[in-house]
Image 1: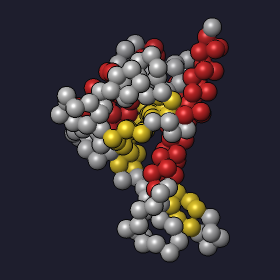
Image 2: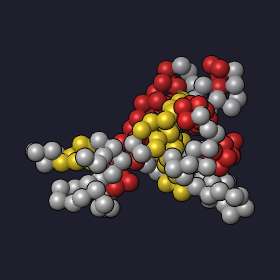
Image 3: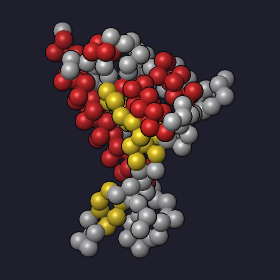
Length: 184
């Protein structure tokens, strides 16, 4: 049975993989809500990872690397805890995925992250050959996926990434706002 959003006998949809397959269609069907439902599912997971960061006093950003419905790596911000300025959620997730696959190249993967990647993370995403980045909240101060810089889709580099922003942006932004409000 192909993976995807399936209707059970009650007509309810449930997630079981990477494709949205409505009743009466085979696994080759591509529908309008294919990415939307799947992206929301994985972003909800990234938001839970952001909560891990917040619980440790770190900026609440979570990320996970997915390929064919399988989590290859996940992480949350931990630069303060690890004394590592590169320990952004995206980098932690990419490192875990690279170790799991035994390769620094991660083609065919999607990185879900609750905040638009910065320039450092975007560079790592390019070098890893990530196929797609889905992010929640935009970062008007340091975003490098279109807000301030456009590293991921720019034509000057040898790899371009498909980017989708704004998935569950309200949830992602509210976590960040709550965190920084408590710090003031």
